[in-house]
Image 1: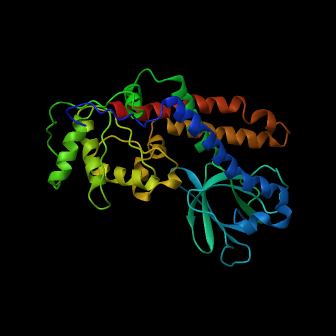
Image 2 (image 1 turned 90 degrees about the vertical axis):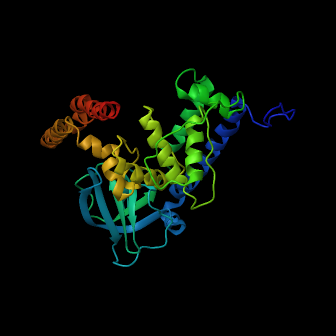
Image 3 (image 1 turned 180 degrees about the vertical axis):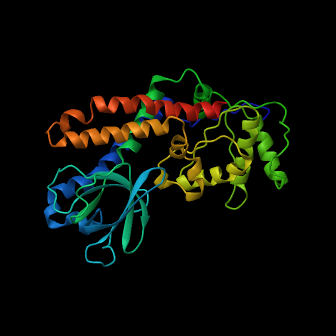
Length: 347
């Protein structure tokens, strides 16, 4: 209540209460996502996975091409030439590719992300795929995305340790009700980049720029919230701020990126290329890495490593080479490519 103190007790939970509540829920969600996969391993010989839609059997590779910033796109169709059987695969799902009759627990030919789905085909983006093993009947299996759960748990671990520096140090106490948000006494005036903003949007932007910690922009669909957010980002960049823009979905972030690109701000879209809209791919980290000065050198080293391993294969020493000394040289140069992208953003 403005102008006085409220006697109502805050309903906000503490940071430690939040962590102790959320951590078990993440574990439960992860366990549930694994339950079907584990059940499939037990009864795979009866086609249980296929009936449940988590596995597509009897596939053939009908097309292979390079795209999505160097990813390998493989298109699969049914060996019978019909539409794909009923399944629960969706775009952006993580999948593994195996021979159709591979034993349980056998290594996958590759792991990728579903890029495109049609009635009669499914296209998967792979980082790398072996040249052999694609001629026989194949199967695709949905797998749990371990990265998502690991990142959420890592974030909780960092919170539990306490954040003592950086923007989060001031933000976390406000979010958990330990301290009121800070707002400038005077609204910030600005010259809009977008000349079509209405009065309510301009007022919201001014208040957002005046807020030191948190600002809530709320409104029904179609009222111009994304347009307002884009203007806020542009104004903050103009003031010299570094912005991390996040959203609950990939397409929401892509919409922001797409609207920022015409203003020629320096930005990097993080995320797997298969999960991004085609019109924002040039802003993706993978695309900017490929344009880096050190990328060509790293790729040449990778090609040389591959040929050395192929030549040594007949001498039965491939296992001693792969993953050891010959990978170090490539790893030395890859960080320089990422460094170049970061330095370009900060310049």
